[in-house]
Image (cartoon, rainbow, N blue to C red):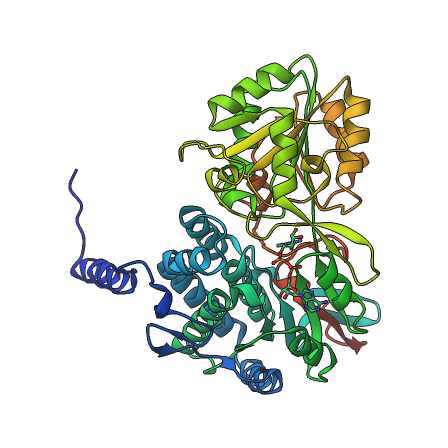
Length: 486
Ligand code: NAD
């Protein structure tokens, strides 16, 4: 097949290939190459010693963006997308090296998803209402500077996804990232600033701190320049942010159940569940965490999972593993609680199983076990490639137990079925922000499913699959008796 390219088209292709080659990572980042302040000796842009300084600079950035057009903002968003795609492997590698969680290939895919499917300025829409009394406009305005708390599980993905949405809405951003992922998060802050500046924006529009703590978070909550708080994390931090007295968006914990009934395509269900459950070693809050399967198809489902890279543990092995992946800790109230063992969260299945003396090869990506409903593998949000499976008699029992296992988070649930009555009944009962039918969990954030992506799923405060418009405040402008042309 022959193509007739013009010289200009050829030059454009050559310059794009050269620039992609230049920005591609040459070798995996060694530990000395990165920390909270530098990458390969280059100082990260937008990272400050104190939270006060970070807020001041982000506020100046926000004021600079206010004088830019929406088209200019969109140029900034395009630059962020391009740089995110080019440097996705770098962030994936630093992310895994720093947090010891997740997988480089899956983290790279997550960054590409953020670059491709996070909405930009097109998400900001205006309303005009005309009538006998003239014209009223409602516009989506920025809040100003947003204070954002980000997790260790999707650190740079969340920083970039939040930045795209918050900047598209016209805001500046200050991050208080998870201390365990500070180098990865601050690399993403630097990346966003490099993109903003290259597209004609201010030198710093998103800022962070060298050492995020609960104290720096408290400064953020109280600072008068922070007009909106956005928190992506577990129950403790979401509660703290929602108690701050400021407008807040809370994206909290989940424990997504999966129901498989006897009308489902069982082989496909087995593969889909394991693909979703093992994505980035189960770190995404939407990932499958426990399964309720009809007893007449349970053996086939388990066999299908074994064909898809799972090891089936005995009940004794499951109980032994539960004692390793959860540890007991006394809370502030003196009560002893089970919490996840951070040495197991997001680790490869092989590494977790070694802790109880089971040796498997890298082809084993998930440990499954038949357990009763009360078992830790069902009740706890483990965030590791371990899946508890509970046999149920019928749809009523499946829904009853799955709703209980979701613990009222109203976050995410999944179902494999061809029975629309069953699908509808579970969706109604569980009331989650995301409900995925007949697909891996990640379809719910636009990966192989329709719809935009986000890494901040705001169930508790109701914004849902957040996007630029979630970070705006509505303002109305009224003109009486004019501007109507009929
Ligand atoms: P985490 O809750 O341990 O930490 C989140 C952030 O909050 C960190 O920066 C941490 O240092 C900080 N923090 C904790 N307590 C705080 C407090 N009282 N005040 C201020 N800051 C505080 O979260 P993690 O382990 O990194 O992430 C996993 C949890 O987050 C899981 O429960 C997961 O389901 C949830 N999560 C939810 C979403 C969502 O979109 N809904 C996305 C990712 C993760």
